[in-house]
Structures are given as C-alpha cells and as structure tokens.
Amino acid sequence: MPSNLTGSNSTTIPPDAHRNFPALIFGILLIIVIICGNLLVCISVYTEKALKTTTNYFIISLAVSDLLLAVLVLPLFVYAEFQDGVWTLNMSICDALMTMDVMLCTASIFNLCAISVDRFIAVSVPLAYSRKHVDQRQILLLSGTWVLALAVASPVMFGINNVPGRVQNECKLEDNNYVIYSSVCSFFIPCPIMLLLYFGIFRGLRRWEQARKAKLRSSMQISQKLQDAAATATTTTTMPPPPLPGAQPPPPPQLPPTAIKRQLTNLNLHLAKQRKLTELKLEELDQDSDAEQSTVSPPPDRNHDPNLDRNHGPNLDRNSSQPVPAVAYPNLRPNQEPPRRNKINRRERKAMRVLPVVVGAFLFCWTPFFVVHMLGAVCDTCEVPSKLMSTVTWLGYVNSAVNPIIYTVFNTEFRKFFKKFLPRCR
Image (cartoon, rainbow, N blue to C red; front, side, top):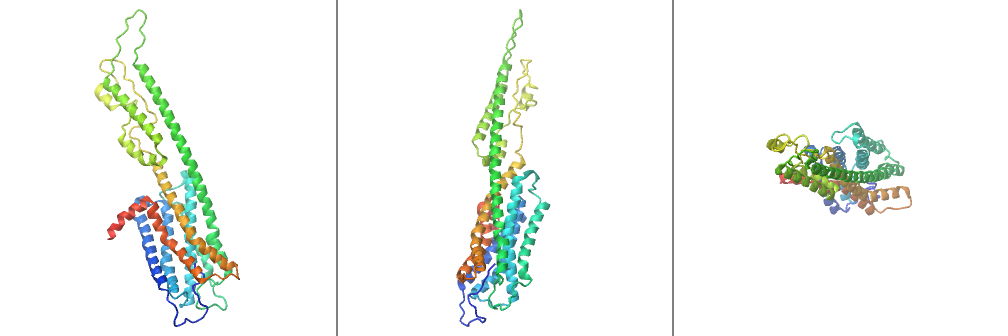
C-alpha cells in the first residue's frame, strides 16, 4: 500500500536520474524468499495429512495473499524504487498496482483476524468446532476476508485516483479521505478486535488447563482411595472365617504364592504410575500417554485374568475352594487408548503458540507504515520524508517473507515437513 513512489515532482525523468541498485537487489531477493517460503507452506499442507487442519487452511489463505503480493505488487514497486521513486509507466498500471496493494494488504490482516475468530470459537465452544473439516462458518470466514478486502480496495479500481492536476510521475493514493478510510478499515479496526480475541483465547486456555489439572488430581486421589480400599479388602478376605461353636476350625487356605505376588506387583506398578503422573506437566502427559499405555502392564481385571485362568482356573486355587481375591481398578482399563480429543487439543495448543508470533510480527512490520500513512493524510502541513515512507513500506513487505520462517521455527509439524522436503530438492 505505498502512498508515494517518487521523490521528484517533475513530469519528466532527468537523464542522469539516480538508479537505486541496492533496492533492486534487495527487492529481487525479497520476492524470491516470499515466493519460495509461501509455496513451501502451501505444498506442506497439501501433501501432509497431519497438517490438514482448519487452522492451517486459514494459514494457506494468508500464504496465498503473500504470494499474490510477491507476484503482482512487488515487481512494480521494486521497479519504481530502482528508478529512485519516479513512476515511468502508464497511470492505469499505477491504479492497478494501488488496487492490488490495498486489497492484498487488507486480505493479510483480515486473514489473521479470521484466524483469531476461528481459534476463539475452538476454545469457547470446543464441542461444536470442526477440527478436520471446513464447515460453513469457516467457509464464510475465509470468503469474507477476500470479499471485504476487495470492497476496501474497490474505490481505487473505480477511479478515485483520477483527480484533476494529477502528477504523472508519481504513483500514490491521491485522495486523503480514502487514505484514512482504507487505513481504518484495513488496520485500525481489525487489529484491536484481533488482540481482544487472543486475550480471550489465552484466558480460556488458562482456565481450561487449570480445570484439567484439578480434575486429574481429583481422579488420582479417588484412584488412590480405591487402591487402599482394595488392599484392605484383600487382607480381610484372605483371613479364615471364625470357627463355629463346638466345631474344629478348618485349616487356613493356602493361596498360590505366584497369584499373590502377581497382584502385589501389579498394584505397585499402578501406584508407581500414579505417582509419576502427578509429577508430569500437562503437556508431557499428552505426549507420553501412548508410550505409558504400551510399556506399563495393566493390572488384573475382576472378570478376567488370563494368567489366573491358565494356571489356576477361573480365580480358584488348586488346594482351596475359596476364590483368589482380585483387585478392581475402575479408572484404568486394559489396553485403553488415550482419547483422541487430548491429542487434538495438544495440537491446537501448539498452533496457539505460533499464531500470536505471526500477529506480533505483522504488527511490528505494518504499524509504522499505517501510522506514517495516516499522519501524511491527516496533517496537511506535515511533510513526510520520502526515505521514511520508503523504509516503512519495505518493512511492511518484509512481513510476507517472515511468516513462513515463523512457521518453521515455532511449529513442529511444519518444521518436520521442511526438513524432509528440502533435502529432496538438492
């Protein structure tokens, strides 16, 4: 959304016009980085099943806006910067450049705002949120970002830049009222909404994690009480009944030592697992639940114990008619897999970590531009230096190259794909 691509007010280009080669080299490198980085993001989501989530579909929309910016806007902007800001092409091309620039910049921030809305719904109403398939609400958000972005940029397309006395070697937004309107719609309204939504998201996540930890502690306390009660019941069951008056007391039953040892071993394993779970963090609990289920043997069930059935019959001792007491573990079922929802929540919490970084990078890159842009439109007596305007515009465009780098650093699944994909290209 460059507002001024010239440092001269003359209508002709001086023959000894300065050529800005550093801007040309930096611009070409920036275009290559933006195209390659965002193409990798699109390819990764298209090819990797683990990355096909609704959050990443919004990231694809953001990557597409960055790609279009690199293809449709940056080449002309770099050309004008190479000419030291003097516009030498047709003014219709300038208007097309301004239209695409406003629309794609607005689409980027609207995509980020749509991501924050989608994440807020996922945290606030998790049961009604579709994590794997794009539903009508998400389709509406995705299409709405582009429709609104086009609506913000449409006045330029319909000729708002065609003002009397327009300088032909400048490519900028000519109407200051439109500059204010586009800046407010593209930046100053969506950004506060987005920040408020993320504040609500992280408050909801904090409450959710605290409630989950409290539920885990309560479940382990109940399980510990049940184990104590089961141990007490085992001790009392193995004691012989009191003899009848005048009758000779029967000999005490002899329990199989292997059965008693097996039950005590399983009980110790279960108690050790419970103590270990209390020391784990919430994230570690989600990651290691599969490994623990496969390495820790489940304790015997009341209704079925294969070892006891094979060696001693259905819970009966060879030398005694009394059944061997079995301990019940109501909160731990054999071969029970951890709920799928825990894994999805863990993935969403990882996605939550990268998205605020994307938003922070966007604000860092584009806030200076919009502040300077608004200042030049509101204050008629303020003269914004052309070098300052050029610098903040470059900083805004750098954001399109930063987003893919953020994904590789902060998102494990994107990072795994890039490590696997890049060696193939060598």
